[in-house]
Amino acid sequence: MSYEQKPTNYPKPMSFSVMVFWTGLFGGVFWGILGFLAYYFNFTEIRPNVILEPWQLGDWKKGWPGIVLSIILIGVLSIIVAFVYYAVFRKFKGFWFGLGFGIILFLLVFFILNPLFSGIKPLTDLNRDTIITSICLYIVYGIFIGYSINYEYQINNVQVKESST
Image (cartoon, rainbow, N blue to C red; front, side):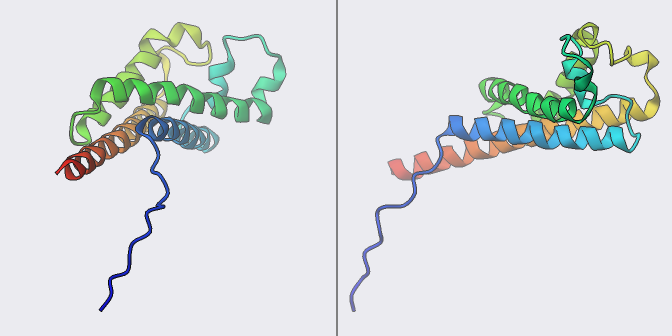
C-alpha cells in the first residue's frame, strides 16, 4: 500500500487585508444597487446619486451615468468603511456588532453628514417608508460587512492556532 503525496502547490489564500478590501467593495456595490432598486420601486425618496450632489458635475449626474458612478463611488467608500470596521470591531463575535455598526452609519449619514447632501431631507421631513427602508438597508449592510470580516477573522485565528500546534 502506497501513500500518495499531497501536492504542496495549493493556491495561496488571500491576505486578510485583501479580503477586507473585496468585502467592502462588493458590499458597497451590492447594497448600492439594492438602494437604487428601493428608490426605483418607491420604497425610498433617496437616490444613490445623492452622493454626487456636493460636486457641480452637470445634469448627467442625475441620469444613468450618474447612477452607475454613484454605485461605484459607494463601493469605494465602502472599502474605507470595511477597514474601519476591521480596525475597531474585528475581534467581537456575532452579528450584533455589525447591526450596531449599521445603525451608527445610518446616524452618521442622516444626522452628521446630512448638510452635505441637499437631496436628503432632514430625518423629520422624510416619509416613514424612506426612514424604515434606509434603516433596514444600513442595518443589513452593517451586518454583511461585520459578519463577513468577523467570520474571516475567527477562521484565520483558528487556522493560525492549528498551524502552530
